[in-house]
Image 1 (cartoon, rainbow, N blue to C red):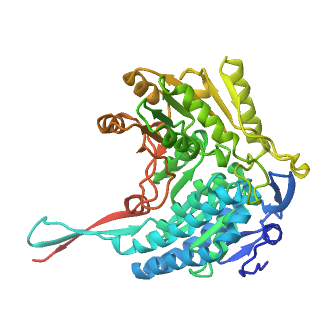
Image 2 (image 1 turned 90 degrees about the vertical axis):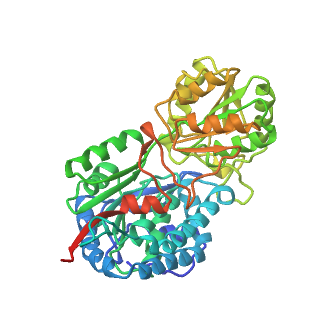
Image 3 (image 1 turned 180 degrees about the vertical axis):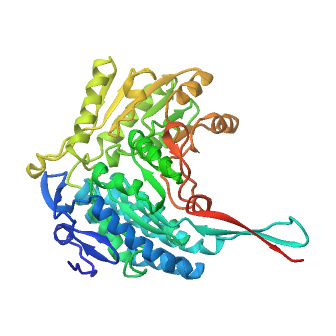
Length: 497
């Protein structure tokens, strides 16, 4: 079942080559049952590949391979592990255009505005964490002059990593790169909507690292994800996905008393004050709502609170900018906005658009549907900007995961802070103002794990990332995250008498 690691810039051909395969123990393997499921191009509705249907037997085989590899991997000097992980990044960088095209094909994310960017950050994450290897330090403790007392950091063992479909490359890297550097082995369960690009990444990684250190399975949650979380030899789980599934993962892990990192949903507020730079705030709303990704982001700024004095001007400028964005074939360089990932997600988005209209909010429909006849079966939906929305409305409270945002008028600062925090989520938030005092007050009072002033950056290496409330547990993307989530601390005391 070999697949060449030579650069392959035809995503359709590469998708066919990767069909029907898991990758564990250093090689491609078919599903134990022989079953598969279709991988569909959301821009056309055409099946481009078949993914291996992972089940408990596949999970067990992959975990066995990981257990066998982990002990020897952990024995390697930490700087050697770091150099190998960084080398993985350089290999991935050489293949980033190939990987970008493949992720655009299977997820519908526009190549120029989304997929190519993600492929670039993917390789950077491996280089970043590889460079942190020497920081896996212990401590010496002045406990007793006659006792040498110290702590050391040890790997947890085998890590189960379950990743989503919206940013699978980056979020996989933020899980597996620090785990590898810390001396762990990993078994990844890919999202059923996006199994191909991450499979290719794991294949390429395995040209650098020993067999069995990083493994990947494709499949659905109940048949593949659940057995992975429950497996007796998986000692840590890191999960990105919905709140509902996150709770199931947490309960299963609790039965084994193993640590869990959860990055879950969001309904992120963006507060625009009356003194804000309007053009800067509009650019921030475009970036923050992730319109180029069809709003399919857990940090999407889907609740935009705009001061009454600039509300109308803000809405008009925002509409103007979104109207200028082109929806089309994700692989076309001229495309700004791609597709929704699946029919199920499209139905969800359209149902919330209907809920917003029925609730009395005013929809401003932007951009234009693609005119190319080849895309008539594509999963496209026009961005909807709703005004006349109350913060208590369903479209303002529930995560939609689509190009639907609410622009909410405000006049009282204390009230808008309260409304921004009036959500079960606490992943990200932004405040837009020229007043430093207001900015400093807001960043301390906003109930979110990732807060910015006058900008809306996405997560990237070296920025501690994670939410509070129902948005999850634990942090990712930093040195501290690697130490806290992928090692445990052992205390050693040597009697010198």
